[in-house]
Image (cartoon, rainbow, N blue to C red; front, side, top):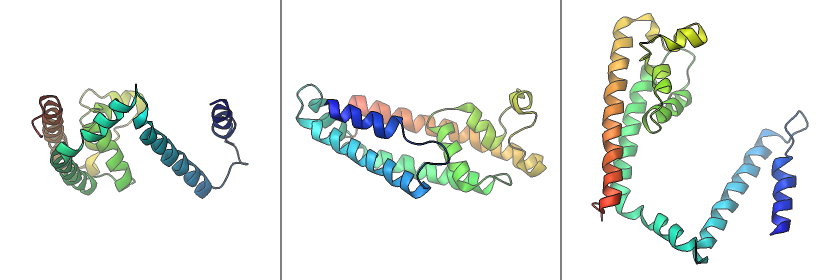
Length: 173
């Protein structure tokens, strides 16, 4: 136990953060190894009396809801495709997907404003001196993107609520 804490302290807490740090590929590999080892450790904890039943229940809860998870994933990909097409210059598809995830799954309305310009209160102008989404300076595109974001947020919220209800009522079993 103590040696694991020491290794964590030495390797993770004091990982170099300046120019002398490892090359990016090494950093990616180290973090991948850490994630695999941590999930492996969690998997082995199934036999621990206090934690084991929780882990088993958590893992087994996904099987009955695979269909709903696939449906939510397909809805997300469909919406991501729309917002990637309507994105502003300088915003990559990855940027759009991350902000869409933040807007729909985490319900972060500022992320929605960055993707679609639903910042009707003008907070972005106050914070950043400009709107983060300008819709190629085309009012039709900007209004259409705002409408798609509002409908997307509504549909996605209903899907997530349905999934949560299904979890607690065992509807998908």
